[in-house]
Image (cartoon, rainbow, N blue to C red):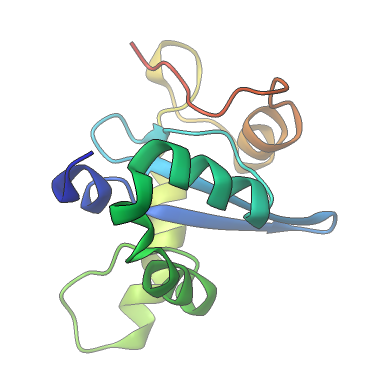
Length: 125
């Protein structure tokens, strides 16, 4: 998998009372690219998807995710803008039926809690 593909799929962390979920976001379709997964499951998926070369930068990306909620950074000097990228991506989502905006609670329910067993990627067609 190419480095460009990795950079175009930001990792987002969603924290719920039950735990943390990590997923890749599809910035072309403004919706999740993968289902939300616990960190260890996400790391296994990531290695399977991107191989050893993709794993080289994962810890740096996850460090940013832990600090800001999203591995995707805007070119900005302010920490506030970087933190808002997580909220921004979720707020402009088109994960609903016919690519409509989905309520964040519904998005979390469907893409984090209702992940089919053994399935990681989402077909956005």
